[in-house]
Every structure is written in C-alpha cells, then in structure tokens.
Length: 166
Image (cartoon, rainbow, N blue to C red; front, top):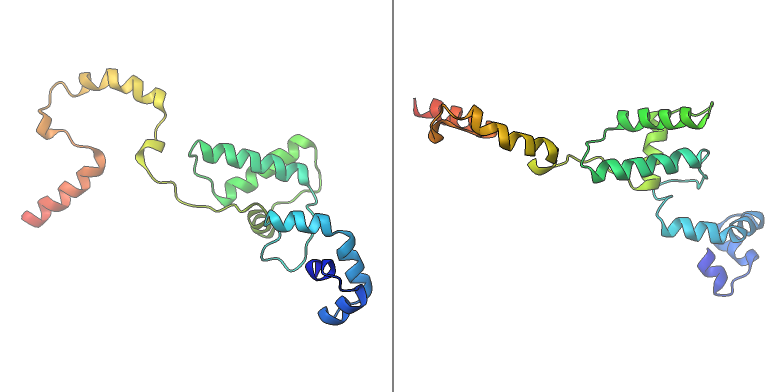
C-alpha cells in the first residue's frame, strides 16, 4: 500500500484497491516510517495486526539477556524465558506484566528467537574446570592401563558391542 502511494496513487484509489476506508489508508500512511522500520526488522512477521509492545523495557532487557546466555552456550527453554522475564519485570517494578504462552510466542516471533538444541562437547564444560582436572586426572588414572580407560560416551557403545559378540 505504501509503495503504491509512493508511485502516485491517491488515498481514494488505494481505498478502492485494498477494499478499506480512506481513514485506514491515512492512518497507515501517517505511520509509514514506523511500519517500514518494523517490516525491515521482521518484527511483525506472521501476525495479523501490528501492535506495539506494551512493555518495551522488559522485552529489550530480556533479549539482551537471551543473547548473552546464548553466546555462553547456555540452553534456554520457554519456561526459563518466562521466569527471567518475570524477574526483570519485578526488578523494574512493573505490576501488571504477565508471561503466558501467548506472550512467549509473540516475543519469539517479534525477536526471531528459536529454541534449538546446543551441540558440541566443547560448550558443555567451563574452561577453568578443565584446567583443574588436567592436573588431577593423572592421579586418578595411575592404577589403570591405557586400554582400560574410556570416555563415558564410548562406554555405552562398547557395552552394546560386547553384548553382540556374546
């Protein structure tokens, strides 16, 4: 509609083309800068009505927390997101904020948040803990031959193989 108006079509012609009232067309054209900005950010994808966030400060703080947690490879679920949002709301003193499944779904759509399984063993353990274990591990392994030392994710495989051979 905005592109058609910029090509020279009048509000009356746009109302006829899109089957809406002239007032609706004027409202859209008045807010065209906001609409185009939100369109570029994909915030209102898959929604019928563009509604502005009621609590933008909570949403901004939550998305920053989400980005920092994801950068640290912390697994995040919907329940954790809701809990963190309530903690932020309490810290900001917001009284009428509620996190339900509808809020979570809209938040995820607006901010392009996807819950995925994090993969890779390198993200599972803190580096400081690894440094401590590199000094302690030789002490624990002193009484064992190298052929009898297994990684825990290999243990299940060797058990299954031993059952097949038996």
